[in-house]
Image (cartoon, rainbow, N blue to C red; front, side, top):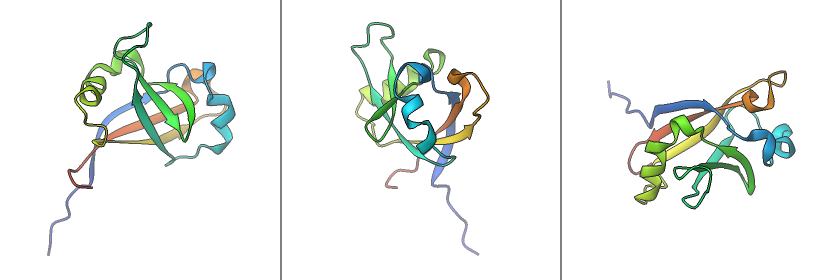
Length: 112
């Protein structure tokens, strides 16, 4: 029997910081568990020099929280934009907007 190889490894689970200040409220009804999101480095962000924004299509949802973004920002700074896969993993409509959407960040297997 052939052994299965993992296509991705769990790297980070977090909320989306700043969700209520960007396009989170506009995109909220379009998001579902499993929705794919994108990361974009914001090296010139005056509030956080390690800022990593989270996007759904062309809508900015917020950021990877500051306490979790240093390593992700370093990978992105070094051109490893394709190493991460980001998915919505939890939605709680009753929570405070900063905690309504949680994401998982995975590291993808090379070549996938």
